[in-house]
Length: 296
Length: 296
Image (cartoon, rainbow over all chains, first blue to last red; front, side):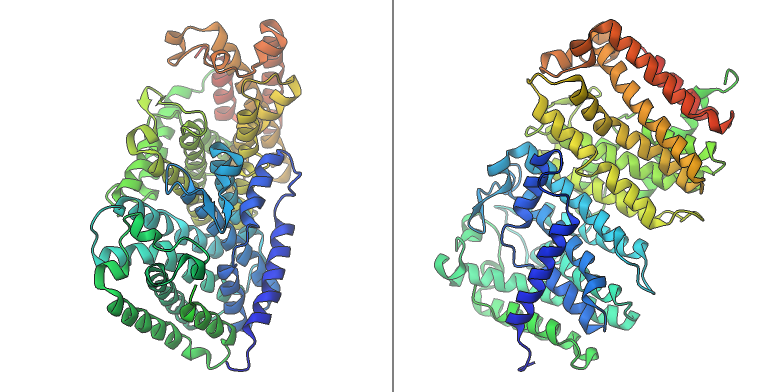
């Protein structure tokens, strides 16, 4: 791992993902131009491409190529972007800014922002169903994987619970429920899709699921910790946002020390899940290491 | 056709569709209950199930069974319902009532209504990908069919053009563009899916496409005519709504007489498209006859 250059790997992969997204989406000039501009505005708004990177890294860990995994990486990014656009709407979190830019509805209006989210969600399935089928997993399995992870029992369930939990006192179990669905579901789906594109074995798929699940949970606990310990400058976004929004966080429920212990525990479980890959999961290891030791 | 009892056929099929939807969707009690209640509220709000009926009738016309077509009929109804929920939102058409009942966001709030639409769209793909694959068309073709018909170049394009056309003077060509996308795309998709579930031939698929396209256009022109010629009582909904909303309609662009001639022409084209089925498309013929001669 010490020899693996994550920064170069991420730079190259992110560029590939950006190119593939540009190729797979209708041009900004495609009629009606408004909707395609709106879709592209949020899709190319400077996201870190964490989910696509996980798809590609998981494919590599299972001996698969970038090319077969790329459409699935793009599909997952479309899902992630749609969920952010809808999350930011006045009827939901009502956010004006994201990553230092005005949110989709601030630029294009609420109606177009709703439709741009819908269109990206639909586009995700078109891209996923168009992907080359691997020897073990066909379009059927791929589409079901994405639909389940982003449906009303997972990603959307997390958003509903988050919406309903605002300003209320919630338990640690409920917070875990939200994190599992809002974050872990799509991260586990990302690595699973990467594995599936490489025609991975059931054992590899189980290891990837375990890894994605724990990385997602650890990521969220660390996010909660950074929100209270870092300044807005260090974070590059408004610090203390969760507290202000009356959102329950790990530090607010179990305290900062205990939160750190939980994050360390979850991170260790994520790392342990990669053992069966016996050093072939270098990119995955480096990404999780990067995500879990980050300061912003 | 004179011997075909459409009313009985529709009653039986609608009951089957309702049962299948109930079976395929998470229970209303599934956690988080709010989202599943909201999804079901709009899905079981008294829709006429026109699209599912078209899926099943097209399957019959191609010699296929109800069972294989049913998941696709349900998927299309989920797409239709999601588009209505989002269409009614304050950021879009801002409607308080639909089919005599409060709209989704009036009952569940805007945030949940956005998510309920998202969840139904996602559910549509899960249901479609779970359907039994026919000998000619796999999950891949089915999912692509639905994604394209409901994506940013078709259904969503129609909604965008509709949104952008409000209160503006638009041409007959632009109105046709909106109708093709807002209505014809999903109607053509419906009959195509029915045919695909029956493993139809390419010639049958082309005939169904032609039929669905023209039924959709005829349906919209007739809708426009009824909006200005019928009273609210006769329609069972607010008459003159389009005029009030400043929406361009066929009568407002080409006049009432010409609109009637266009509707008759489109209806004739829809009927002619069924010729290759040589009398085996009885249910399809009866449904289009019913839709195109309706007074409300």
